[in-house]
Amino acid sequence: MKQHVLKGLIGLLLSAAAPYAGAQVVFGPGPQAPANQLDAIVAIVDDDVVTRSELKAALRAAERQLQQGGTALPAADVLEKQVLERLILKKLQLRAAEREGVVIDDATLNAAIDSIAQQNSMTLDQMREAIERDGFSFARFREQIREELVITRLRQRVADSRVQISEAEINNMLSNPATLPAPNREYHLAQIFIAVPEKASPLQIQQAQEKIQQLADQLRKGEDFSRLAMSASEGREALEGGDLGWRSPDRIPALFVEVVQRLQPGQTSDPIRSPQGFHIIKLLEARDSGAQGVAETRARHILIKTGPRTSDDEARQRLVRLRERIINGEDFGQLAGANSADAPSAVRGGELGWIKPGQTSPQFEAELNKLGTGQISEPFQSPAGWHIVQVEERRQSSGESGDLKRTQARQALYQRQAEEEWDQWLRTLRQEAYVDIRL
Image: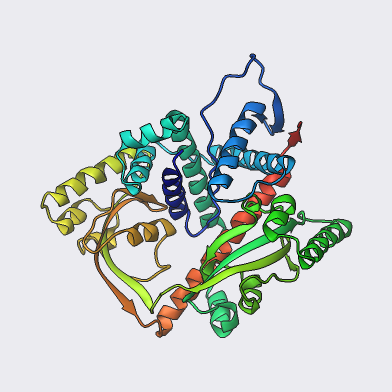
């Protein structure tokens, strides 16, 4: 696939997943018929399997991604191990989503694919031609997008069910400024991670500690961090050399904040113990985010809720028609009053007032951030239902008010806890699964 199409896809998925981060996208050609009727099984994953042809396709795609990014390929056995582990984890997530009833209908999938094409300044036909010209199956491309959207929605459910921010936690953060670095700084981080199982024995903890210490010693002797992460890290980002990407302060676990603040670009930390295992953190770069104060948005929306009588597709289609009527000149406020299921805002013509970061769901905030003043979003889904939203005005607040500081603290806590809970949920999912690797 063309690199610009791939980048557009990753951008879409990461924005959909914000603030959870870490969505891995591994592309390969469409399913290929094996030379004989029986394709070799390389891993049994609960009641599913990973086949040799699946692994080969994923390996080719991973090699291509690394080469396009200018990353030296690790040893063949290391790459195979990392890619197989990703395939195993992805199958486990998809089965978990099935059990939870997470479904992405065709209308939602088509909207996502249209968005990818628009982000790359292409028509749908042009994108299809670019994908197929590079030897990829467009049908398989569609299914991979569906799978990634399913996983994104599963992440959101995990966060919604597990993360509850108390007033005491907010008070504690506000009374300890060291746990929240300057909001206008961003950090490009990488890590090497060695996991410790839940209810680990003292021997297992000791073995993990000895392993991370050996890796720290290798780094001190000049071993390349990226190469060592690829070969030894047990983190989901190992194949990228441990690269965690750019992190705003609210997406750095509280345990690491003070450590990161003390590091200079290029430096690595000593091993850090967390409830999940042992980490070595490297600060690759730091920069000013350019943020001045806090961005606030005045917006209005129309909400359609789903249920036994209204499917996702029906809710989305209703909003498509309402959006077209507004674009053709009908009054947003009147249509909101007559159609929106959000009663408190509906009586005000859909008005939500001034919205600060962290006051709405991650999905709603992500859509707001895409819009210019006066623009109306395409229909999108949040935990509350389906929406269209219009940005009416934006402003920068000083960030000095007590209420605003509490909002920022709540947002930072939610971001951190959501990511930590997702990581812990994935580790438990993997540890409790039956996996038989037959390479």
